[in-house]
Length: 103
Image (cartoon, rainbow, N blue to C red):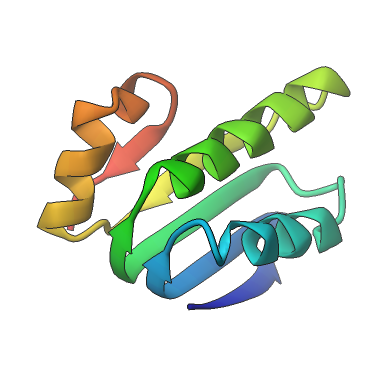
């Protein structure tokens, strides 16, 4: 998996390519930690994520919790998940915690 971040107009877009799983969740967290707290929105682009597992779901929830713990009100959007990844997000009820936009 590779993770990249681009910041434009106070929006951090984090792109994930490949399997977002246990072995890559810490890399995702490191990239999120490197983002300035002045952004107003996180966009997690999963268009090229081939799969997600429970560790990846935990990393997404951990990001949300860490921002809430320091009283930072930032929107987190999950964008462009593949059909397979979207089904995993829905079954795990992540669509109740995050804004998920379809392809």
